[in-house]
Image (cartoon, rainbow, N blue to C red; front, side, top):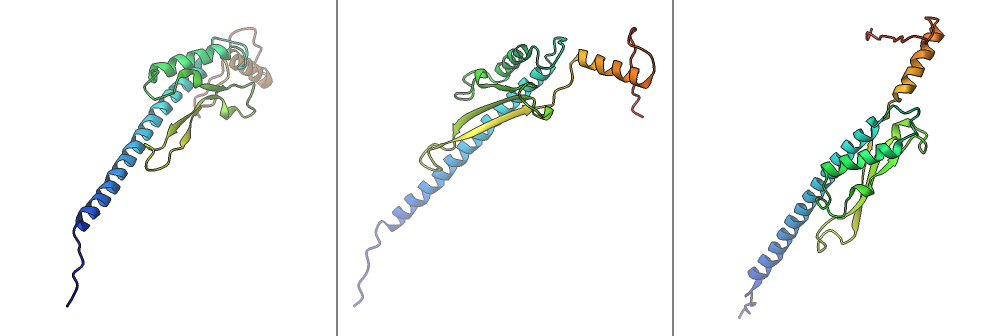
Length: 174
């Protein structure tokens, strides 16, 4: 005679294991989507703050002069695009600058922010936070005064006159 094995509860156990795995993946992908959304919001606010930082000229003599004013304006713009509390633990005070006095290569002038965010809800995907960085290095243009000096030097080098009167060079793109 054959012995019959008791299989009661096998389908229930398989259902619970499969359902738990499926729900875990749903929560994992949901948290990843929220991280992407938060990251995009922080990056957009950083980009807009970077633009404000670049154009805060105030007719100063050099790029190094007056960067505290530019940074203040950048923080105001950052807060307007990303109000405090919208993305957890990210504030405008975390915004940092690469000013011309610190960086050798002009392409790395601008603002950036570094913050941490949990990758997942904890039970799936790890408990440790990931470090996020958003940079807005837009390349700073010369100040108005530096532009005038460069145009004046070019006029005098070409022998077209002096800078005792207002003279401009025109570039027709040709």
